[in-house]
Every structure is written in structure tokens, then in C-alpha cells.
Length: 394
Image: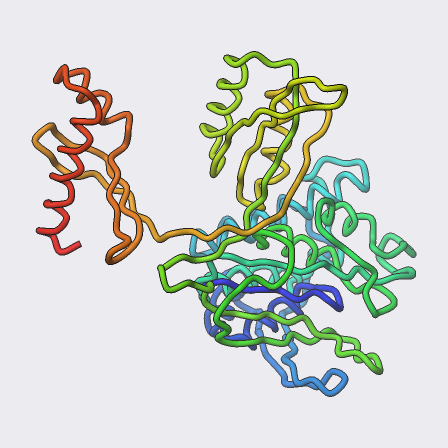
């Protein structure tokens, strides 16, 4: 399942949660997760209108609360709650991001951060509820559009602050943003943390077969523009050949000071770190210098990590970024028994497109052991694998 989050009017925890529920997330799953944090908390929904658009509003009610909670106290609540592990980890990532941003703003250690508005049970419920709703909807990929932050100033427990609030601005580093159509605070720290924690990439609406649309209402109802966050939910677009489309990031830098051995080491390290692919190609640089373009393909969420790794490995002074999409053939990896022993194989495609390829490292080990050319071993192993899988009906 793939989803697209439209943050044209900004994003907050309650807008995000309401959009998920309106798109089909079971309310009972959200209520169960919130009750695991605070049994006194009650999550309700209310249909509302925002500038002529029908949407849902989420209301969280709970017993009398203590003062500001620290990040350590909130972490203990989440870690001690009876939650699905994926839900727990998503909530912890979001609050960790919040704590680190607030700590940077106020000059304290993250564990000592005192949350005021964010420490209230309704904000905690928003974070845990969003994590539970995403898990219940089985969303594999979440793409977010640019995040509208608003403009002007906002009154907080720390006084009057510019929009976006300092913590919100830190949380949105690396995220495409704009001011949007609404004045005041359009994106809250909680909303920014959830987008950072949950979005796999940022960009335009990805190709999909649309199943449902959810509208989550903000508390304000300005004239002339619906204050809602939209969630579009569907299946990734596929071609007749069984290909699906996924967003990826291509990073590239051009260097002229590395040896062939050094370049080979860079590619090996990038692949070991989990890159989707990595390669280098000859390049003609300025002043006619012969150079090399080093490229790496990665998941959008890992863009910053691989840009840093590429700079570290090559010593380059800059890395170019291209956010693109790729068509991917359905594939499966497994180990099959052959007359040479167990061999890892990859299966790709369906029907007449179906192909089976054995892992080179396994083939090379067998070839050395059998004193036989590797291409001969490959043909025999893949034929045996094809027969065995056919017998299993795969």
C-alpha cells in the first residue's frame, strides 16, 4: 500500500490522525493504542466542514494531567505500553526527533527537555494514534508533498515565537517547505516530527491506483481555503509486465584524484552500507581533465546518510542530488538445494518474464571446489533450481 500526504495547509498531529481515520484506518486500533498509553484517554471523531470540504476532526479527552512532561517520562510511557513493536518504534522515533530539536533550541540534553503543549496527553495520543493508524492500514510507502509552515508569530509557553517555531524549523531541515495560504502556525512541532518520522520521501503524488481519500481538519476554519490535510491511499501503479514504480534518489559526484583501487573500494563500501546500486563512469571535467563520476542509488529516506558517506569515501566537496523514480520487477530471494549443495538464487518477473539467477559468490565457491568454469556451474545450478521450483509449483 502506498499513501500520499498533502500538507498544502500545513500538518499537525490531529490533522494527520484524522486524515488517516477518514481514509479508512480503524478507529478501534487507534483507541486501543492510545488506551495503552493512558486508560483514561478517550478518542472521538466529529464530522466538520472546512470551506465547503467535509472532513473529520479528532478529539482526545483524558483525566487531569500533570505539568510539563520530560522526554524521559514520555519515553517510559511508550516503552512500557502494550503496543505493536512497529507502532512503538514509530512513536519513539517521532518523539526522539522532537526531543533533539527542542534540546538544540533550549541548550539542554534531550532527556531533560520539558514538553509543554507536546507533553499533553492529546499530543502523545496524536503521535501514538498516527503510528497505530499507519500500521493498521499496512502502508508500505508514505510520500509527503511540500509542507506549508504558515507565517507571522505564535504564542507559546516560552513566549511569542516566529513561525515556523524554532523547533519546527529544525525538524523540517531537508524537507521541502513553503509558507502556504494560512497565516499563523500552519505546521506544529508534533506534525513536523511525525512527517519526518513517517514519510519515506518528499515530492509529487506518486503513480497509484487510488483506493480512498481522507481529509483531516485543522481547528481553524478560515474563509476561502479548506484547512485540511489530505491522505490519498492506494496501490502502487503497475505495468502489464508486473513492474511497480517507486521513488529513489540518485547521488553523484565527480572526482579526478582517486585511483582505480580507491574507486572500487568506494563502490564496495556503498553497497555494503545498503545502497540500492552504486557505480562509476568516466567523465571529462573542466580544463579537459579526465575524471570519474561516482554515483549511488538509495531510498529517499537515506539520502542524507549516503550523501555524507559518499563525501567521506571520496573526499569530494559537493554531491549532486536527483530525486527520480524507477520501475521495479517483482523479485524474490531464496535458497534451493542442488547437487552441489544449497545455493542462493534470485527469482524475478512472472510468466514468460520469469528468470532465475544464482548468486555469483555461491557459484564461484562451487567452481573452485569442483575445478570447473563458473559459467558451466551457473548453467547446471540454475537448471536444477528451475526444476526444483517447478516441482514446488512456484
